[in-house]
Length: 243
Ligand SMILES: C[S@@+](CC[C@H](N)C(=O)[O-])C[C@H]1O[C@@H](n2cnc3c(N)ncnc32)[C@H](O)[C@@H]1O
Ligand SMILES: O=C(O)C(=O)C[C@]1(C(=O)O)C=C[C@@H](O)C=C1
Image (cartoon, rainbow, N blue to C red; front, side):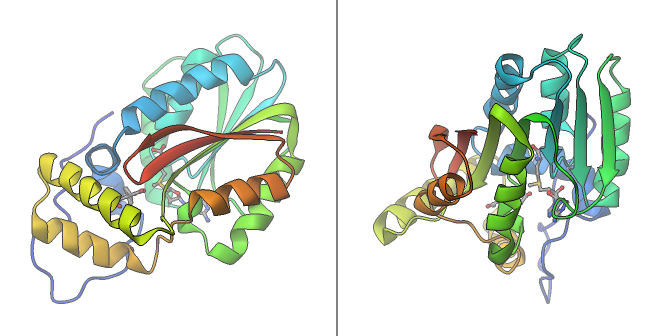
């Protein structure tokens, strides 16, 4: 996957605009997410392994907020020959355009329907697996319950939802401790103090993490029978919920 190095926040700006998944971000996103999210590569690989176990013949798979298609590609590799379709959905046209290129770089017999749409507007049906990989945190909090309910309603019994998110911790001391380690992770990956603080300001009004307690409650209240965190590094986690 071709990606330029992320230096979007490297120069001091008079005003920091709200973070957007625009053309500039799409062009560096592969580099940005790998250097910003601890465990991202492991999460992407494991999503493929989960698909191998959960995706059933003649069912649909949904990658909601698919960005450049990393999760879709990981899933697709594992389900060749299963007569399934993947729906990869993102409301950023720049992401969709780059994702189209990334998907066409590999040959596959699995159809990927790549749609530029809001994930709150699409029908979810006959799904054996749904992925929300660092996407739910960008939706207004008031829209999260109804989306999770619609996902669950559109899933087959025994279907798997994978949901990865940055976490907020109710315990202030724990929140501070893990946030500090995340900042160290970014520094170790070459981000300067200026880049870190300018990106933090840009994300402030746009990305609103929930706590693990809230995630678990939302998933169980809206129809999922089983829940676990399967991965956590600092304040980033990936969870599984089974219908
Ligand atoms: C952090 S990125 C997701 C990363 C991606 N899932 C991966 O594994 O590489 C969040 C994505 O969600 C998309 N997004 C945010 N809100 C959305 C919405 N309401 N409908 C569709 N896509 C949305 C953004 O455009 C962005 O590409
Ligand atoms: O907290 C941060 O610094 C992040 O950059 C996190 C995060 C995310 O969790 O999605 C935010 C925006 C970008 O999409 C990449 C990573």
